[in-house]
Length: 523
Image 1 (cartoon, rainbow, N blue to C red):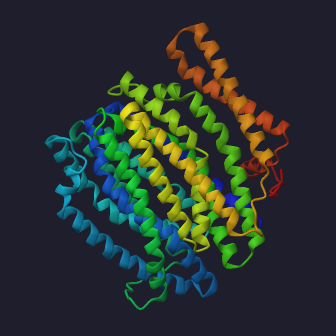
Image 2: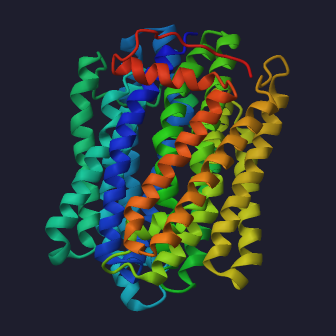
Image 3: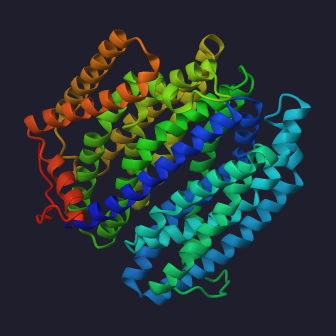
């Protein structure tokens, strides 16, 4: 399959994610300045745990179960049949989410008590939970809409949804933070989810997707989805146990531990989402379509291209984040209620978690591949391994190194589960091995290490010479830019041709080049 469509979709998602990342970064900076890393921010995170868990279930079922069914329905039958299947599933989803939300309201006192260390925190968590819960319904419908649009290779509208959501949260914080306090973030989130549904609906209608008031149990696709959902639910349960464990361990550490870990995780996810998620999200529907059409050679080419591109883009980002961790956090967050202690805690967690920047999207890619092949056992075993390693590492490390133990446990669990996935993927189909040489990764890691260390060395030399910390706002970006330039120069020197694909696709979008050829090359 020509990879032009994949890179085109990835580029659109990259632009949307770039804007979203800028606004997300602005949101985190403002929330740190307004609320710091204290009990109020911790309460928001704990209250958001329940909605996040519910949305993770829905997202997992849609990505692993619904998308393959919808694509096959459209390919093998007709768009009308696919729309009818969609309508039935959406209506059942709405009824299910309303029922679960009502249950959460009924037992909100018990749910909020799980994370509270005193009565003040308990009441604040409960109050925030009541505000956040309606967002689950609208986010669920938005997930379905996004999944359908992506499966039809329409990436533009979904790519800019988080841009809109972040903008609304920022507006609410700026306008209402003095009156509503931390509640302003919660209300901004809920309003943003409502608008996501409103924005996507006309686009779906324009593309021929029809919604009907259709509700029936006598639907083979619904039964297939429910059958596929059982292992997916097991997978999400395991994944959410990790979130519970993280929040549980951090709840009994120093105040601000949960917030520091959250800020660090958010910043780690910026490059992961910007580059990794964009490429994986653009590749997945095409890979599933190749599976549906039994074009295994094209399927394998998509997987190899995605692996090479993820490594090429994210390896230098990983090392730059590790070396510049304290500088990045201090520049972005240290102001207002975010003091020196919060900076040190967040920067340390950020440095440790940065080791997983390359692993996170690759693990997501291979999980999706197993889902596409209707193999649920390996992803469940992988997540189980992650959970076991994470909890075991936390039990060993948290008593001695506190919040750093949680960050270290997360990185160790990511690495072990990723290696487990790779091992089983190689055994899955001996005729479609990953044709990526070790030398390719060695070249990228070497170029990344030289680039990052060169930039950091120049920064340290300039910082020692000027001895003015306020210049970090200039020195750090320039040093990081130098790191990237050195890296790209070495990549060209090593003749890693995949970088040419990235150049061509980006330049083609801005009409700076006419050559739009896509090459799957071997290194």
